Picture 1: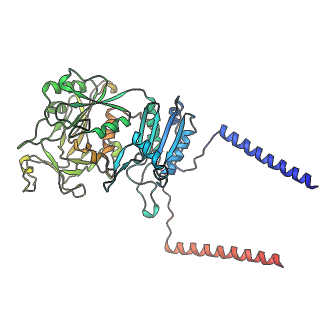
Picture 2: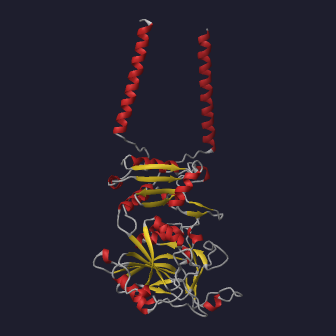
Length: 495
């Protein structure tokens, strides 16, 4: 065979290989498939997710505001690739704060949230932003794994407690929410010393308003005293920390709202007077729903629950497994801080069923001697008139109805200070999660896809000292054997 024929054969071989590579790449792009070899199917999307993504009829842009050094990052990216494979309308853009600081800041300031770390430093929160037309959803990075432990923590730091990977649950619910064109309006009452919604108010929830808007809600203030009834467009009515009582006719408007099968959230702090607690005017509404408002101030003495030297500021001890707070229920309660709260009691009701949501530790009590608390010279001491712990801090009531859709929903929390901006933005606390859970259940905000979180297997190899020595010896002998074999071959060829 002459040189020309050899060159021709080489050229034909190269062209053939390139053609095969091109065809393989073309077929792979036309028949895209990814395989999940994890034991728990951590990256496998459910048929419900496929059905939701298939309904996209316009571009959905997902911004990944995440550092690539985060152990969770590659797992989230892998899941997002699975979503991309389902629809040509879905695109993903990653913005690492270390690599793309300017773009990260622009997108975060437009759609994201500000959080404060344990050292008091403020920064933009990492997570995903989903933009679909004029609507946007923000999913915090902390929402992708269960609060009970760090799934992908460094194994050298010890075995993490059992956890769950919730990427599909969060993403599919967010996409379904964007596709749902139903307007959800949260209406905050005003006129009774409640928290305001604008930054100009001395006590304001402007940060909460922004958070709700990011979650797809519209937010307005309503004056109960100026209206004959609450607008039907409201999905949820919130009474946030009134300092003055509601008049009977105003309370009847809220009562009628609840009786009509609507949702109501009452955040009722104890407002001290000289020797007792100011009435709210909503006592009868709550009592008829199976909830009694105690005229006390909760004091916590369990050192594990205190966040300062004051017994009035503490973290909750227990979250019950009701749907309204189920994401927070677990063997180890997440830190949700309450301050200057009143206790609540569950009572019998002929018209509703009440259940506790949150309670304090057994070492707490409800102080009824308000005058003694205002005396800074003496430490409070529990007596027979006080209420023994554990005490309920939040109670839910569902009104009886022939159909679930017409059953009124009511949640009463004996505190509104948990909504303060420092607590809501503190990344070490779960106050934001507690609020999201309440509003999500009352406002029916999430399209519940019933997609179970994935439980990745934690496989660890534990070796004794003897096993470690044997392993090292075996590896060393293998290296020496390979080196000897290589030397034998080299010297054999030289001969």
